[in-house]
Image 1 (spheres, rainbow, N blue to C red):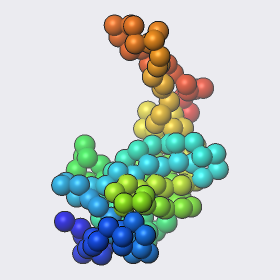
Image 2 (image 1 turned 90 degrees about the vertical axis):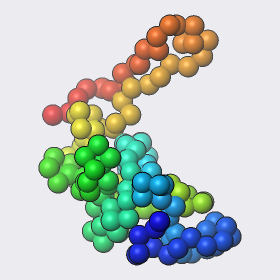
Image 3 (image 1 turned 180 degrees about the vertical axis):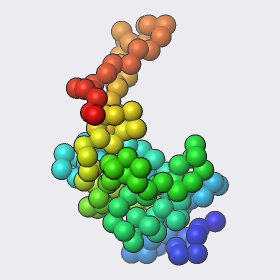
Length: 145
């Protein structure tokens, strides 16, 4: 069920081609959001939003998420000082996924100290698939302090 602030989803054409925001939340009331750096385009993180997180992000211009592990609203940077200033907020074609383009204040996005949560790569191809264990490769230059 959509929060009261959002228009109830209607027909497919209105969702895909219209100008009214009708987000599709999952059965937990959440929608995925991908966040990238407005300056470089680099992917910073993937998280979740509920209706309140979307509303606060729109109202404040700073990223708010919903923490599934803590079961609560999360204002990015409120405890770390690593705020995300929203430059662009988009929804995809069927309005079931969101994208934030942000300026990451402080330089690090990841809670373990990296500029991006995607600091490890997964090898692909025949050599990688022949191994019994998939070994991640660190792409991080260094942890930020």
